[in-house]
Amino acid sequence: MTSNNPAAAPEPGDLTEWVFREVARHMVTIVSATLRAQFPTGAYLVLAFGQDPVHGRGEALRFDSIRDDQGETLWAFPRGPYGFTPFPNPVPDEIAPHWGSRDARNPGPILSMLRRIAPHLPFESLPKEVMHATDAGRTLYGIQLIPWPLPDLNGPALESCECGCPGGECAPCCGTEPCPVVCSGCTRWRP
Image 1: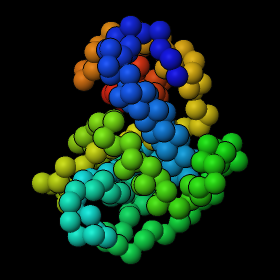
Image 2: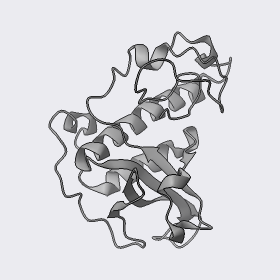
Image 3: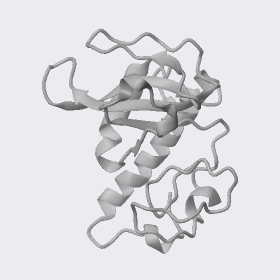
Image 4: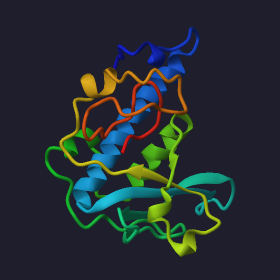
């Protein structure tokens, strides 16, 4: 989880936040690969912030849908406090150990985990090409779904990006094609 990129090194006093951000990036990568394995044509997990449907107050991260790269909805999540239906496909054996005792076919643990890491990792806006007409006026976020196998989470794909950005904006991709991970100098997903 360490990085050779000096732009990714924490400032004195910011070590805790930097560690949370690094862990959050890895967790999002595992969520992404898990959902891609369950929805092989999936391109984005669509998220929104809205009123907490269970408690009826405050802002909460919530699921909207899983969409393909053309914007077709492959899976729509219920709106309301009625729970989730398990995903139709089992989690592949090579991914399941990353979830420990949690069942990643159940969307609840995935959402719970994303809510815990959300303060440490800003999500990207959903690309316009996968938006629906009914999405107008809504702020939606997308986590790009990447295929398994995952890159080595401690290997060069995470630690050798040379964009040098301090966060927020990225230079061109670090050279791994396709680059399915977050640049270690910032928190932007790569196409």
